[in-house]
Image 1 (cartoon, helix red, strand yellow):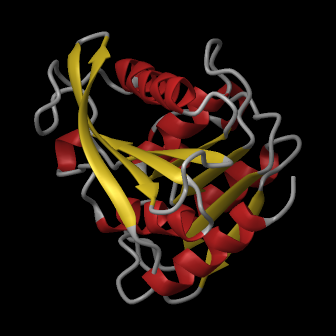
Image 2 (spheres, one colour; image 1 turned 30 degrees about the vertical axis):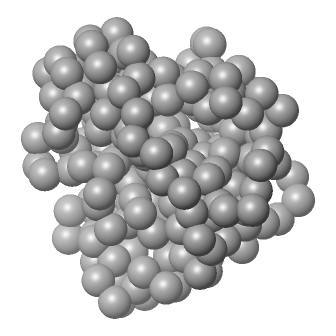
Length: 217
């Protein structure tokens, strides 16, 4: 397990201060990449401390990459209030901009779980984010809750969707139909006997995510 040096910071967001944790693997002065990780739905207990979010961060650390986890507006010590996903995209862009300031030569990866997967996807094609090298969305809630496939811009970077086959929150069938309708479709990994919160499957999640992130573009 990679040892990391965490630093709690307050980022100047559109709606006020954004609570964030910057983590850099020890013995790494200038990471080759950094990953911004977006958490689940703010109104359903989602925070940057979610176990899937922290698992994704650890996956990046094992590859020598830095991470920025943050609480969306209105969560934890982050100021503001829930903005139906619109303001949350700008929160993610703020975190990405902070990473680019810290490590200007590092590649940017975006990742997110559930609602956070929707935000990461939207942020990856939003003007102002700059070049995104990789996108990782875990059980993205978009297919069943937020928008039709035709409303989504497909990112111009390698993109992996990891979905539990027994997800009780996000319908796996709808996720599969949605991804297959996109052009080009993302890479999809369907994990058998796995629910929405990846109980008992975090190691497998880390293995699949790590394999994707480690792969050359």
